[in-house]
Length: 337
Image (cartoon, rainbow, N blue to C red):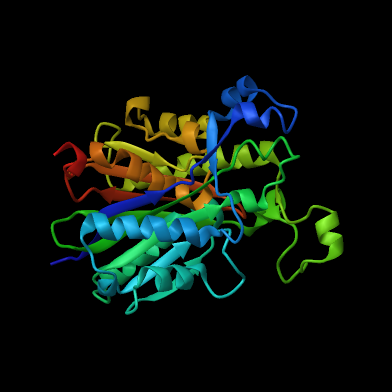
């Protein structure tokens, strides 16, 4: 019997601090109306405090996931952390998370593909399940984007926030889980969306700090054009080769970068707004956190057998789409039991 990798649970975490559009109006020359109209974002969460890295949020998301699924940490075989803002250059943030949550029998590693990272990590984790190598794999997407955002740059500081989401992958022989994916990259996109300094090409120095080169840089109009076209194309491609019509799709789960990009992708797929997972208005763009945060927010509305199309676009450029058949019905809320 064919083995597929099914998502059997989700966990999530966002920081308590809420950065509203109104507060941003006091930092840069912008307005709530301008931000909302162009991005769909009303607020975003920010991780505050000393020595608080991406791992802090990833740990909480994984801990919630383990608790919700009744899984013991020592049962986990592999933990993948997709992040663009690792705690340190080394060790991997996945190792830090693994040590904190007690997944002592798992091996762990980071994956970096900008905003497409969670999809790349999900597809990678699924392979370990499908080949029979492992039985329990955690994929966590997390980013502290506030650590690389220039809050004097009104074009970028309005977009990003902090957050983390995690999923548990387990074997399935009923045809549920990750069924197909189209993953792409084009390094020619580097010039349009990147971080200028901080790596081995331009190590940190007094000069790079003074020149504010450790922040996100993007040419917004160009990135928008590529994102609209490529994100929509791969989502449509996954549907076509799996013979799915818009009626067959229960949910589009898009990367939450910009509502106009999300709308364009949905239109290309022929999917109405009632079938689009959307939380950009509350969290902004959390990079690797967006898609798992959507799954967590909408978990109670998902049903066994639902067809989900996940789609993302990221810097560098990276983009992709994953087709998932959801594996379980909504679980009762203990607070309402």
